Amino acid sequence: MTSTSDEEANWQSAKELIGRAAAAGAGFVATPECTNYLGPHAEKVKRADPLWGWTPERYGALAKELKIHLLLGSYNERSEGASPFPAKKCANTSVLFGPDGKILKSYRKIHLFDVNIPGGVKFSESATCEAGGELVVAKTPFGKLGLSICYDLRFPELYRALNKRGAEILMVPSAFTAATGKDHWEPLLRARAIENQSYVLAPAQVGKHDDGGLKESWGHSMIIDPWGQVIASVSDGVGFALAEIDLDRVRRIRRAIPVAKHRRLF
Image (cartoon, rainbow, N blue to C red; front, side, top):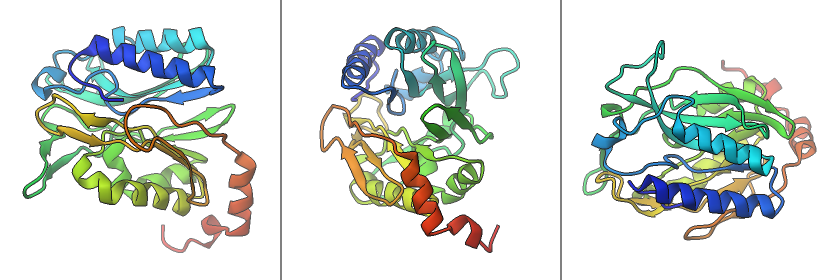
């Protein structure tokens, strides 16, 4: 996707792509980070929804309509009631829906993107977002999903912890910058797949946004198998990648090279 500050246009784009993927046979569909809004960050908190607000509600309804599992890669979640983050900030939150439209799990991004690359991207996600602190693994009919978001990808200890909790499929919805993505995106994704002998599903933003910070995302959404092979990808532009998840392949690889049993550092 190429999300912007136009939330209705983002919804129509996401709805169309999700529908196409479901029509092609997908029983589980995942969207990128910041699916609903990737515009000026001063507005992000003002436009935030609670965990069952307007944004999650319509994605849940779409999952029910299409009878699929659906991961809203992330949206700007508003603090409400006893939520563990201040009202002046929001959370960058993934939401997993079942085919009945109900929320199965949600995950708040733990590692926030605060960087200052000379001559490149200068961005402080922590200015508007509060970091999460909970690891999330979701049990589904097609495997156990370990949830993460974008900048989390640079912290392998997170994925090792998800792996220890049973994750077989690692989710990495992202808005990875073009400046770093051209060199780091695929190597990091493949490393996480190989290290954890897990599938990696990485739906990504692509192209230019009107956010005033990231400006342009690298794209190249991809699905990687537990041997580290890219088995499906969107080479450039807007589209979707489709592949089968074979949990027997996960088990065979883990039996052949029992990394988990060989670990000495914890």
